[in-house]
Length: 498
Image (cartoon, rainbow, N blue to C red; front, side):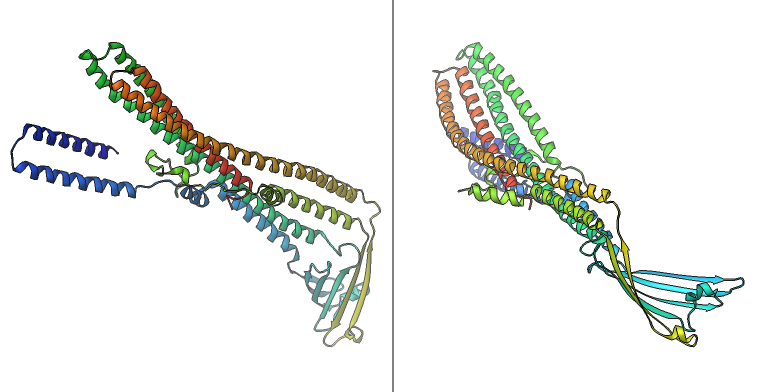
């Protein structure tokens, strides 16, 4: 910007020089050629500066969102929550891993023997059924009461299954753990979605705050520059007696006032840039603070406004698909699983276990025969206070969540209606503000002409300039508020962050 100002000043000086030459009618043949070459150089410099400006980085809202997706720490943290939930699901699935156990025993004394036993167990989610298979070998002398430890020469192979008949058939601890872990993954995904919506919303709001602060700073800078440049002109007119001394004092007051306003606008701009920098982290995790030159040429045209809003459809979609609602429903599912598991554990346990075994090799003819064994295992709880307490607790938790869900749906519905109404009002404010700026500028130009012709006063000029600046600030505020209302509406209807 400084380079452009210097070039423009140089151009003005040259033009003034040319006018002076023409007025004095200096007849030098080399002068036109010199002037022409200077103009060519200035034109080239201006074109180079224009190309440089085009290459300068501007911060558009899409750039902001891309940076959030890539570098924002809280979003990355939420992604880690998803990994944690998936690891918990993997842990729960481990309950159905195949297990292998083996043991080897050597006894000395009156009965000397060696025993080897190994077994493989495989629990399954099929009605709680589990399977097992094993091999054992027993050699040596065994006491008569431990005769079952003996095997033929090549050992015994056995296999069987455990089948629940009543308890643990529809659900058991392991299957309940997997179901709840799966819901946990869904809840982590919903948390991530909610975080993305909220982070995107906050970032976009900070972006519009920054845009508005920069544009208002430029307005303050402009009217301050006008008052400062006017001071030298007024001083000259006061010296020649064209204006009273009070006009010079009045303009000095205006300069000081506008300087203070400029400092306040700059402070607000710096604050807004710092707030926005939290969402503009670089690859090395340091904040990038945007500067004044990165504002797009037409920043408020980046978000498309709605032509027509089907409010009932938006509300219906939001109250069923908003992450907060789905999280409540997921929590209710976890409580339902807890209740179902407690109900299952209150039932009597009746398990059917069957096994088949076969010894191999020389040895006892009795052991050489294949054996089939069927067992019915009965486990009846005499009291169920623990499970009844869990069932009552799960019922109460879901009743609480039902009430919260009803309220949250109403809250979402009202929020969307309010933001929709706000969109209409901010849209109307923009229209009125644009018209106000047009009228203020007309009045300002007219008052300035009157002052230059000696008919008006500097106080009136100041009032008109200040009124125009305030109108332009209101226009910027209305545009920023409208875009912020669009952000809030799209966040409420899940049109951002997905």
